[in-house]
Length: 71
Image (cartoon, rainbow, N blue to C red; front, side):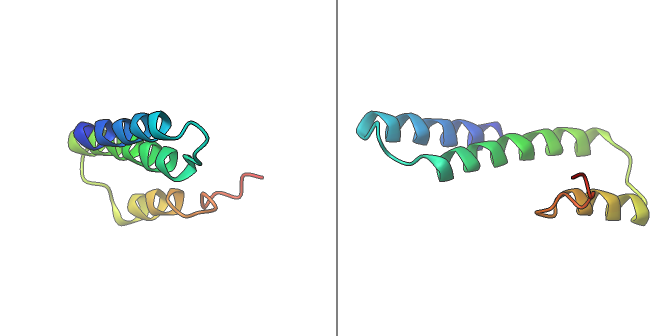
């Protein structure tokens, strides 16, 4: 997954060089998603299998609203 993060970072660098005024919002979003995926992958690989209830709580965190009612 680290290679995906590097690819995203390289795309941002290339886009900045070719057009310093370009809207890089989507590229930065891709980079952040790759970073989060990398952390999730690392945690999941070292964690025990979660129960169905724990999985439901984790899925809720991935919803657009964060699933938590924080705000």
